[in-house]
Image (cartoon, rainbow, N blue to C red):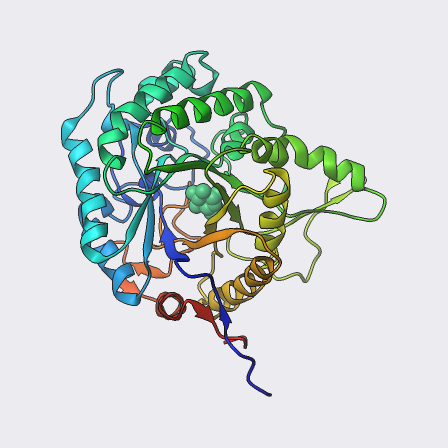
Length: 396
Ligand code: BGC
């Protein structure tokens, strides 16, 4: 087979991997998820426990990502550590996250910081969480508290991770936060999240070097012939509403894993014989470029960062194949003029997948009893792409 030339990405393209505090830090005992994991009769299969102990081992995680050649690390702040009681700010935890930012710089990685990735402090949950009319103000206050972490040397700040999943899962406690057939969103929460996002951006706007946006779970909604309107109605409150709310932001984060096929009665089950991943989702790499194109259209051309894309599998060759296909499509979108600034793989580590450690998304394996990290081939493969700023034209 003739060799196809490598596909080059724009200069300065961000190549990295992403994590979230509750999924890797361990012992986030003061947030709503921990409470849910340990509640009597919880539907959660297994608790997060020590997770990857990244609260202590973050330097090793950062060094591994830098060593393979990546240039960006996206991680999130744990609100319940920073503000363990309403209005009480832990300086030690502010310092902790400042050290993470510094460790990224020391290793030559750009830190990308998410302020809120699914978890809220217990006190916030007890006040009604995002249903509390005061929630957007509480989030603005938290953003102010977190400013010392991002004020110096953090260019990209994600305010709220997957607000659409937050709104959708509000009524489906304990179930998977990402799925291909999602419950109806709670519009009250959707609106509250938009206010919270805007208020947080306003606070961040005080620091001109920061670019802020939010990161949306795109779902590659596809209509069966004749079901186009059903598909539009399905997608609007679950995805498009949140993308439209990103108009005028410095960027929008696109997160994509799988697709949802809509028939006359809504989401269709995945047909027998279709390849699925450990989360039960269809193996469908084009989900990324579909999500990117929808985001580009609905935001009226906001710069795009792929803030998450990946696959839960024990077969690392499948992870590489999936990612290669997704990146090839992404390159095509760039060639067509879509302004894409970076690609951050989900996830850096095999981590706590909201209820279970079984779905392994990581490019780095973590031993569950010793916490020892082991690079997978996919980590080296993605690092080589980052160093070359190009992907091979051929499927690896
Ligand atoms: C979330 C991650 C999650 C991943 C895979 C996204 O919905 O942001 O926290 O682990 O998808 O389910």
